[in-house]
Image 1 (cartoon, rainbow, N blue to C red):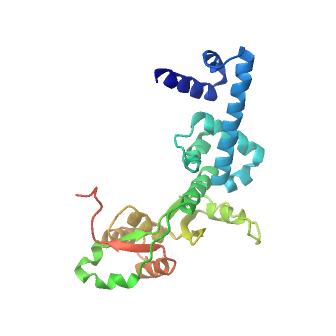
Image 2: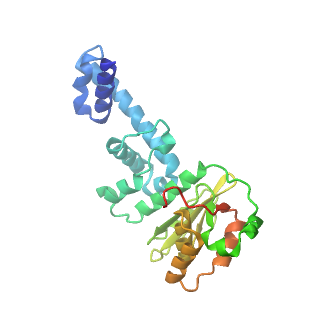
Image 3: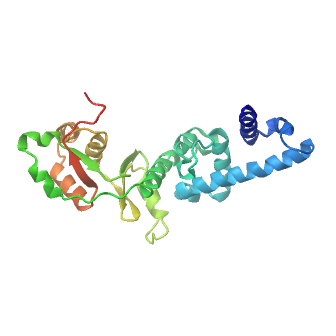
Length: 263
């Protein structure tokens, strides 16, 4: 077993750094040139897998920067952030941070936020189905307990804020989009990401609605989430938001219990 561990360690190191290829010569038959060619095949397959996984999660980012440049991004990202999961759909969770720091993407300051939006879409697409729920069950909650209601939001639901028009950029790059392609680069967007059946829907979300949903997603009870939102946005209409959320099946239940981490 110690030999297996040593082999795996050398193999992983050589995949990430070609300069360390000589370490594999004790494991593979043939001269140094043959070992290098063999390892090059594994490296190429590894980069191809990373490129495919990232392209699946970030199709709009890929369109924006172009196929060849995106392939280079995948190679550099994989080199610094090797996959830590056996499921390639998990690969790319920190791609937005990579784009924010990578010198060759600094000229596209909106790209990291666009990537954050795409990752939220990617996660929502694989989220569990929302359970059936009858909102009339809220009627059974006593008036003095209503402020303690904690809504259970549909799996995969997320709020993504940006000073850039990321909702607009995402929308005009969708395959079925047939409108005009202008973008107001001075506008800021907050995206609401949610599953609708088998599809994922991205819509713009007002600042007050976003504040309430974020607080509620974090586990805040109805009373606290509403109070915090009204303090920031006095014209916030909680009833209107909940009516839209129930109609769109964004809420799939509620509880009066505090999360386990609370005391």
